Image (cartoon, rainbow, N blue to C red; front, side, top):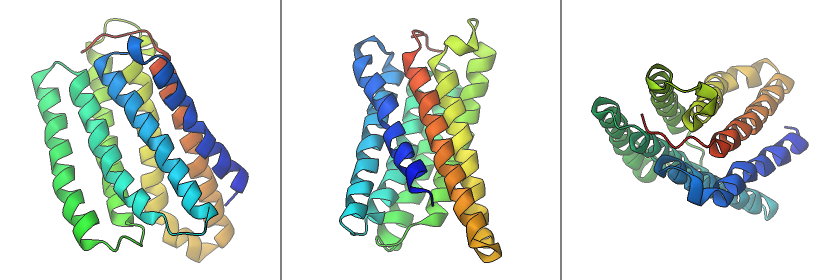
Length: 212
C-alpha cells in the first residue's frame, strides 16, 4: 500500500472535523451530531496511526469504530428527518445493527483480528440508510440539492461504503490473483476515503439548516 496515500487519507479526516468544530454553533442538530462523529473518526485514525507507529496491534480500535460509526450515522439521519416513517426506519436499522454488532464484535470476535464480516455488514447498513436519506432529501427538498448538507453527507457515505463493500468482498481473490492488484485496490480505497472526507467537509459548510 502506498504510504503517501494512507497519510493523505489520515490527514483528510481532519478537514471535516475542523470545519465541524469551527461552524458548530451554526449547524443544525443533525449536522452537529455529524461534526462530533467526524471528530471521533479523526481521533480513531490518530489512534490507529499511533498504534502502528509503536508497532502495536490497534485492530480493536477499528473493530469498535465500525459499530460506533454505523450507529452514529443512523442516529444522525434519524435526527435529520421529521418524517415519522423515515425516522422510525433509521432507528430500527440502527437498533438492528447494534444487536448484531455487540455479540458479533465484542463477545464472539477475537479483538486482535480485523472483523471483516462485521466491516461488510456495517458498510451495508450505512449504504442502505444513506440511500434512504438521499432519496428522502431528493424528493422532499424544494431548494437546490447542492445547498443541502445531507446531500453531500449521504453521497460521501454511499461512495465510500459501496467501494469498501466491493473491496472487502473481492480482497482475497485479488490477493490470490496478484499482490499488486490487491495493493492497488487498497490504494483506491484510501483515495475514496479522501474524496468522501472532502464531501463531508462540503456538507458541513452548507448553510441550510432545514429538516425534512
